[in-house]
Every structure is written in structure tokens, then in C-alpha cells.
Image 1 (cartoon, rainbow, N blue to C red):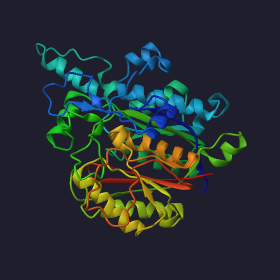
Image 2: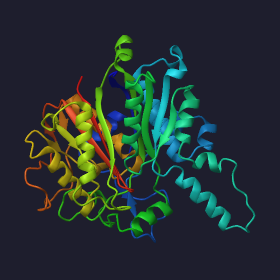
Image 3: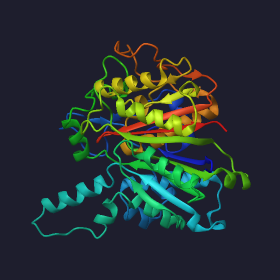
Image 4: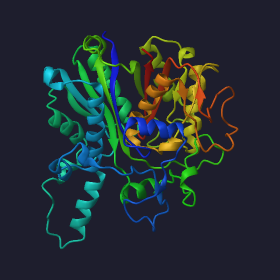
Length: 411
């Protein structure tokens, strides 16, 4: 099968709206969490989130594109445009049917849905829905609008697997390219979930931190006092390209995608399997797909959302797969970004790739005291660590029992 490499990256995050700003703030140990500004949260139990700041969509979108798209699509186009620009590809030089888009989102146009339904319910019952209601709402519109904007006529669709979504998109793009079905695929994930209904729904499940008095320390994976995740928003994008195609055009290559896998817990709607059976199998299958051994992985960016059950379930799975490997370092960067839901895997893939490039593992911040139930031999990085990084793994899991893993290698 053909090899697949990363030749472009783009990001819209709570820590910056381009890859370099995002990465620099990750290395500084910054938190993107603060009081919500998208709406008035005063009556909500949770009043903070990790919002995107200073977002200026007009940099990459025209007036009509902004008017006709939900925020999750705007984030997607913005990040994808950066990644394509970064790749150096002149898309007009290639057969447009060779270039596809596989995008992911967990919720799609949540803000559009809320606004339209609220306006209808608060009115006199006369249906006055916008003709853009459905196009702005549906989850596949991000991939559709990216393809329309750039004339990309290859494979085009959207994956939806809750918080595992971005890794699902990457896995599909990886497979289509190595099977010879595409030369280039623009892939990633985007989410704009910081809305009253979305926040209220997650809050009612008691899945979120309630540290309203100090949001910046609220996301604290593996800490004994962790009390839930912080909602985040944004997008991450990678340009995946067939290796020989990239080499022939003299492209800069960030890393190689060498393995990917998915499994299901088949256990519970929202809770992970306590023994991490599905998560462990996902990692094992990804290692097998990459044709490497567990002790070759230098860095693992875990799902680690800062929930009491989820963090430990994943570490139990990691412990099973890596069997106390002394080479493996783990850092949970959601401590800084919050949880971007369907976009989480996309921004964490960028972190893995930058870690490989710069041989540095970013810290897990906000850890005052590690949970005593963490398996012995697991190494949680709580300060930036310089280390040669050849291979990095990233996990993303989602409601519904979805488990996904991708593996990148230095090239």
C-alpha cells in the first residue's frame, strides 16, 4: 500500500487561530478557559468554557459564505484554508477528482438549530424558517463548502462519531490514499458547541467541571480533585498526501501517518468501559496497522478529558497495551484547550506532529496531586519535556462507545 504523509496544517483554537500561535501557547502552559461570552451564562451551573478568541472569518471567507454557514463550518473552512495554504499545493495544477475532503463534526450546526427553533417557538406559530436553516445545520456542510470553495471534486463526506470524530476522518483519509483512491485529502474536524442547549445538556449529565471561580485550573486530567471536562471549540486540519506525490513536487513533509484503528466498547451510552477493553484494542490494532511494537511509541496524547471515570479507564487500557514501557510519556493537553468534542482529535494530532518536529512533549497542566489509582509505571508529563520523539500516538473516544487511535512517525 502507498505511504501517507502530512504536508499542511491549520488550526482555530482557544489558544490561537493558527498553528504556530496555538503551539507556542501550548508550550507556555496557557489555559484557554474563561467565562463564557457567546451568551449570558449567569443562570447556568457551568459558566465557563474554552472559547475561540478574536476569530475573524473574513480572512478566508467572503460575506456570502459567512452569512450562509454555521460557526462550525466557518471554523472548518478557516482551518482547512490554512492547511492548504501551508501545503504549498497549487490545486489548479491537479485533476480536481484526485483531491478530496473528509471532515468530522460531532454536533454540526448546533447554534443554527437553537436559534431557528427558538425563534419559531417564541413567535405566533407561523413557520418563518430561514432557507439556510437546513444547509447551515447539517453536519456534512463543512466538507461540502470546503470542496466548493476550492473546486475539490474527489471523495467528499463527513464522519460523525462524537468525540472520536476527527480521528475517524483521518483514518478514512489515510485508507483512501494508501489504497490509491486519492492523491490528496483535506481532513480534520470542527465544532462550535458553546451554546445554551449544548452547555446545558452536558451540564445536566454532570460531566463538566463546575469551578466557576477559577476556570483556568478547572481542566485537570489525572489530578485527584478533577471534577469534569471543560467545553472547547474550534477546528484542526491536516493535508494528507500520498508520499511519492508529495516527494515529486518537493513538498515539506511534517510527519507520516503510519497507523489507525477504531473499536467500540459496546458497553454504555456515555460511560467508557471501566477496564478500557475497547480502548486497549483500538491501540493494539493501530500498532498492528503501523507494524510497530508498543515500546517504539515515544509520546501518547490521550483522550483524558478530566473526568473521574474516563481518565482512569483510559490509563488502565494504556497500561494493558504498553505493559509498563519505560519509553512512553503521556501528556493530556485538554488541560489547556478544554475538550473540543468532535474537533479534539484534530488539534491533538497537530500537537503530536509538532512534538515530533521539535522533540518536546508539552505538559499536562493543573496537576497538584496525581490520583493514587493511576497504574504504577505510567509516566504523566507535568512539565515540558525535551526528548527525541520518533513516534507519537493520539487517542480520541466518544459517547456511544467509539474508540479511535492514530499514529504518526518522524520522516
